[in-house]
Image 1: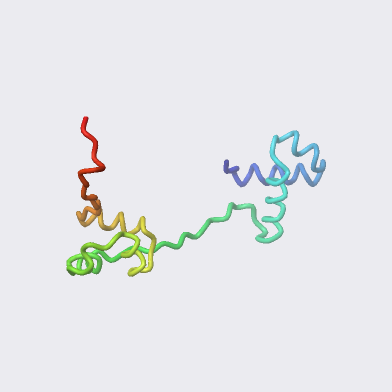
Image 2: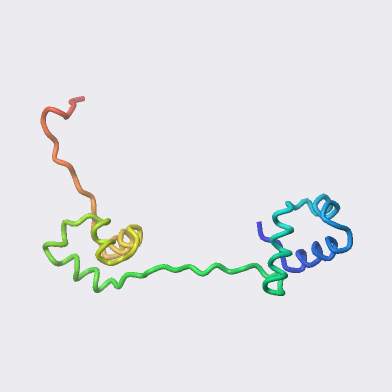
Length: 117
């Protein structure tokens, strides 16, 4: 749960005046939350929440389409394609879906292992 910046300031001011125990019970927050805010204030000088930077790779659809048109690559598993492109399997799966490729591999049934209903 994210707290607003003004609310965090109010809690820290209360903490500096009244101490940890009163602050935790008054505002019903955990000590790790309080100490995290104190640490954030010391490190950055501000109480704004940190934004996380996401690193992800977007595949070029044209390169993937050319790759899939090559007959030797047409039968590869998604995990093999992801290794070739250096990205996650889910990225490849989503890109293939957008391009209209289906990746289901059907097993051939053997007569001895199939059951009749």
